[in-house]
Image 1: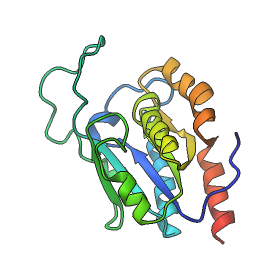
Image 2: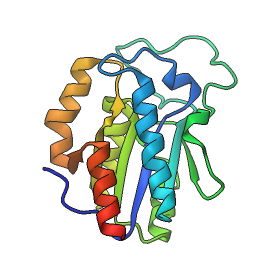
Image 3: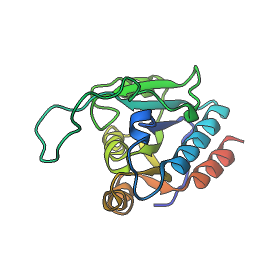
Length: 188
């Protein structure tokens, strides 16, 4: 579904733009342009006095998986947000320990306290943190918008599956430019 509107109470949620994640090899798109687009979205939301939520991951859900998990100790700065996102004092930080940003965090409570009805999502990785957060937001009743050129993945097929099969069922998809244009039209 193409972008139709941004609710008056919309927040930007930026997924896992942290040193450890952006250093991973991304396949569909290099991380640098994705980071630039996420930063552009964050700047625009701040300029319009709309909330920016910066999410990082500092752990993983327990349980067995068939795919091997990263072994060893992570570097001490692995979960630190990258400087390009230019965290501001009014930004909200949510640290998650699962794929989705709502599970076992206070993200829903923070958004509800601001009367947020819609979120715009961007970040890394499309099929993991972004998709899981989009699914949870949809299930919680938020209107979901996905800036699809402001995300990338570790796997091209997984990225494409999220964009073509999953996201259209969870919300509206569009480019960063489309989100920015809609933001300008609805806020002026």
